[in-house]
Length: 566
Image (cartoon, rainbow, N blue to C red):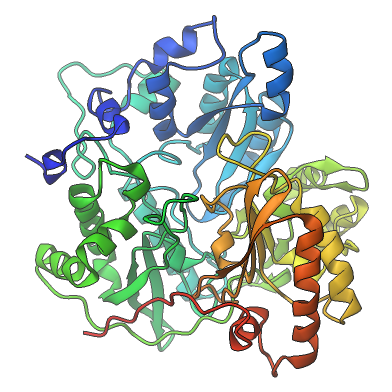
């Protein structure tokens, strides 16, 4: 019997998984039920593994209640792309689906995935089928499994980048669920008689909670490696990839009022040669499968397993299962966790243009028709499109002769050299929040741009308009936009009210700390202006905003990743 079944009081989700027949449930029947726009409650849980969340339009909630109508149920669909790379043909297909079945926009996520929003139940199957037709998938983008594997999306930045990107794809494919339920439900494949499903790693109740893996290449931590259950830091010697430092136990989500929940950065526990990395990852996932909390989902991430049992226990269990010991961690250095914008020439002699996409929302607005511009580029582009971990987009593998044409399209649509591209805005991130996310207490994506407008006035007043300060906002403490790693971080508490956090490092290896609670916009501006003014006048050479806040003891320093030397 697995250790997981020795736990008492299993959560509802565990019972649903147990009886789901490897994630089938009654999803097929729910999709055919025309009396409601929703799925059966158990299927709402199970459909996450297939890449979708059931949501509802919160902006219309009161109006529909008055009309005695059920909520306007709709679905978010997330598309998996390891390392975030797609072809122009795939981009055009996703762009078309967003218009045909979604709300007319594409969302580039903080895990290098695509999201559609506003899909009605009748459009769910056609959307997932169309995604698969262009050789992409929605499988395991949600649910208690390994999610989309992140890495730097430019494999042509160096030979090391190319090798790390290839490994990210290998890891992503290796840890996909093996159930055939996805292909039966969405792609109309017939189950082969006499061949029962079998999950050699996940077993039939999968993991206690989601699991996230990311690969970083120093000196850039552009995927926030310490925020993941498993982080892999590439170690290079003499221009060759030697292996990876192994980081475990990252996760930023928490619950207001529940002190047992908290954001945590991963600990660096050792080094593994590159040919051993998948073995190490599989073993770590197996430990979490067997020992993770299956009674309380708020305490079920790997970070809680490690903190409950101790880091020394975890490393000992890992080494025992491996049958060999990790080596001591190798030296590394990170300098930032943001993106570098503009043109970069790859080792393949082609060009890569990193484009700012505000909070990852690809849409058209007056004077700034981004969605139309990217569609126009996709029709002529011979390279690819790459999503970054900061919700931005790289137009990749551009020939020298094609650069001018792409720049002209961006300029014609009001995108290149936009007047609002200040240092603060280019280093901002926000989650979706209202009006689709059922967990959000406050606005985020729809509000942060206007708040930055006001903060930019203060920044410009003090000569800091182009200074890079990471600013992140989430509508709740689940931290989808990694607000705990913002030098300035906001967490929504209620409509128009936010907790303000300060002091994260600029390179993603230190969490921020709570500064003030329940602030209105007026309060936020009043609190931040004197700190920004002091930073402009009193900072040391090359001192970042987060480090300044700590040095001045405006907030106390928080957890740094532990180097567990062996």
